[in-house]
Length: 165
Ligand code: COA
Image (tube, rainbow, N blue to C red; front, side, top):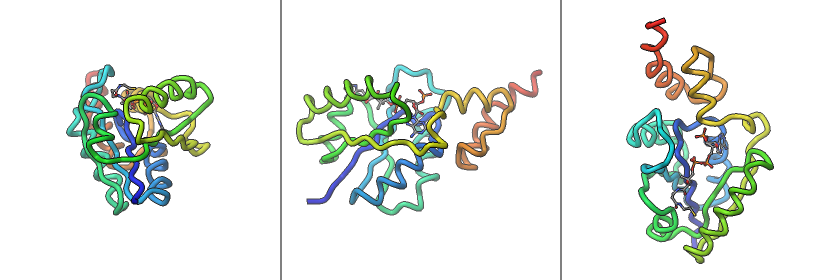
């Protein structure tokens, strides 16, 4: 049986922290599916298509990784793709309570899959997509934290704002 993991998230946008998790997971699992949430309570800066495109472009070197959008319940997507694992990155202890709840509920909804937690690499433990967006929107340098494709997209997205100043 091959091990297939789903790595879900909003990825608004994908950061080097996410990429690091995928890179490490691609060595452990036979197949990793990065699942980009289309419907999210978050007010996203980038459309689902853009978020999928950034993930595809930045992860293209990993041959056993694919990027798909998903709508609705994660559990349904996990079942649809025949995955046996849900992969989640943990950045800090504060992430744990919510993640534990999510893992428990997903286990209830799709018993054939287990949640696997992977610690985020230390130098990415304090970043999040919203922090990256905030820094970029204020003209800060985010090149240490995102792929050049994403850095340029952020710069373009927020350039009109800077010009208005
Ligand atoms: N490096 C850097 N940042 C990271 C990271 C890492 N390794 N891992 C997570 N983050 C950041 C994310 O960028 C995100 O930042 P933001 O809050 O500024 O956007 C934050 O940490 C939280 O990430 P995450 O917990 O993955 O949340 P998410 O919004 O990206 O994804 C879903 C949550 C989509 C997986 C979850 O809501 C879901 O499953 N939704 C589907 C509906 C469903 O099934 N609901 C029932 C669940 S039982």
